[in-house]
Structure formats: structure tokens, C-alpha cells
Length: 406
Image (cartoon, rainbow, N blue to C red; front, side, top):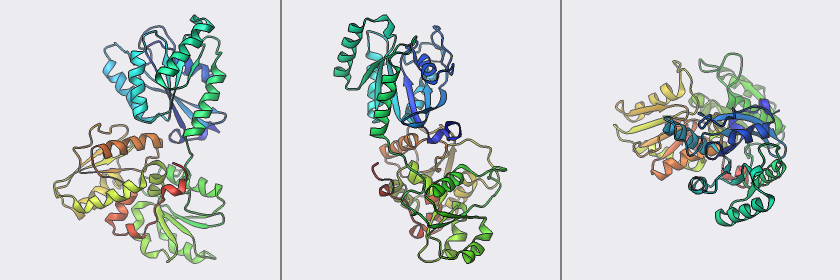
């Protein structure tokens, strides 16, 4: 059901346009409920409003209702920053046109196209135009801007079925669903999951990557054995046949790696997330940069979630300790959480990104592209830990071929 799908694993549909273009009305029209406040007062939408929804033909989605592109309120800067932050997460964009002058929309469309985000143009306030005028305007805009357009009535909803069909066509033509264990297992394989329940583990439930792996392996009809670190050897001994794959929490790589039988693949939850959400080849190649870091190098630890740090925190404690032990106690290490990722990454010598379970692939890939543009190596928690423990060559990494067409 849509309600049980993590927001990070939904198709993100960003809705953009000028103030009072009808963005919030469109959200309410699509969801058939008052998900966003609608008002003629400019600047009603201040922060990005996220509304989960199930769209037949696509699946679980989330609508991102953003502030006006032409905001003139005292909070203009902050609101536009949030709008561009939403663009970083957008898989498919709706760009609303409601004025004769389309310069604002055309400028923003260039931002959308630069990020290779498929876009559907929407002629809003279409009730005010005759059918002939609507058709002429749509034909003109499609020829000029080279994106598909649809006219929508925010009052009655006509045009909405056309938009839905267009959205499904665009989504199916541009997106490919990635699953966590794609290419790593086959039907009937035995997989051991090593899941230490340390101080970071949420009480009474599994962390998201563990839950996602279990669900994917069940869907792939694998036999799953889940154990704590100290029970791994016993689990091996109880297996009727050698397991095909061992998935560990990256923090216990150094403990489990020497115990894995020859012929059994070893990886981690974080590495599988990296393959599903990021650029695994760039991550693996960038890990080699750890060996070239100078003693006063500057490293960014980039987390997607915000949480209260604990004594055993992997990003704030364990990885920094491993880095300083290998490189130098003088290593400069910064931690940035949530969406607080620098627009200019050139100030860093290395970026280490978490698995990214809280954000969609589009957002993680935009972070990677920022790093590539700045010529800064960027790796992943699991890959970095495997490298620092000297076992990266022993670890099985997913490849792009695992997921088929990118």
C-alpha cells in the first residue's frame, strides 16, 4: 500500500510555477483532498509540501508543492532555496504556465533540463481561455520549448485524465525500478544477514536498509537467516549447504570477513544501498583517494538523515576514528546531515556519503554530480569502511548491469 512505502522509494513529482499559478490547487485536484492550502494571497506556500499518493500505472509517488518562482516576499531567498532543493529530488517535473509572459517559466525550464529531469508543461487557469486559444497556445509552447503540454481546469478537473496518461507514459519511458539485491542472488539462494543491534538500532524495529533487504530477498524467493554478529559461525554450521551471500552491517566487516567461506559473496547493507541509490563505480574508484589524503586534508561526512548522535555513531565516530588512525589525528572532518549539502564541494578533499535510505536516487545522484563537477572524490560509508579495513577486494559490489537499463 502507498502508506507503507518509504518516501525515499517513491517517484518524486515536483510541481513548479509562479505564485498563484495553481500549484497547490493541482495537488488538491490530484489527491482529491485539501493537501495544500489554496489562497489568492501571494506566498501562501512557504515550505515544500510533500503529499504521498498512489498513482495507478506508476505506483507510490510523492507530490512536491513548492513556493512561487516569482516570490517577492521578505522570505523570497529562503523559499527559492527550498524550491531548488525540491528540484534536486524531483524525478518528474510539472511546470505550470499561467501568464502571457513565460520568461520566468522558460528560465526555470532550463534548470530542469540541465538536470535531465523529464518535464510536463501545464497550462493552468485554462477555464479563462477558449478551446481554440488553448490549443493555439499549447501548440506554440510545445514547438518553442520542446516539452509536452496539457491544459488543466483547476475548477472542474477536466484535463486531469490526459495529464495522468502523460505522466504514466513519461514515468515508464524514463524510470527503471531498482531493488536492493538485484543481480546479487537467484531464486532459492541462502543468504545470511548479520545485523548487530547496537545503540544506533531503533528500539523494536529494524533500520530501513535491513528491512528493505529482507523484503527484496523474500520477493526473490531466497532463504534468509538473520543473526547478530556473535551468532554468525553457528548460523554457518547450521546451513545444510554453503550460503551464496552474506550481507553485513558495515561496522562488523572486520569481524565477519575472515569467517566467510571461500565461494560465498560478501557485501554490506550500505554498499547495496549505494548501488541502488548512487554511482557504485565512482564510489569504489573514489575510495582509493583515501590513501592519498594528506594529514591536514578536509573530509566531509554526508548523512541524509538527521538524528541525535550516539556513542557508537558510524558517521560521527567510527568512520572518523578509522580515518584518523590511518591518515593522521590532524585530519579535518566535517559532518553535515539532512539536506545541508554544500553547493560548492571543491573545499573538500574527499566526501563520504551514507547509504541514502532517506532520499531518492535522483537526490543522491545530484550530490554525486556536484562532487564530480568539483573534481572531488566521493565514496560511500560501506565502501570506505571496507577499504579502511583492507578487505575491499574481498567484497562483492553491485554493478550497473545488476539493474539492467539505467
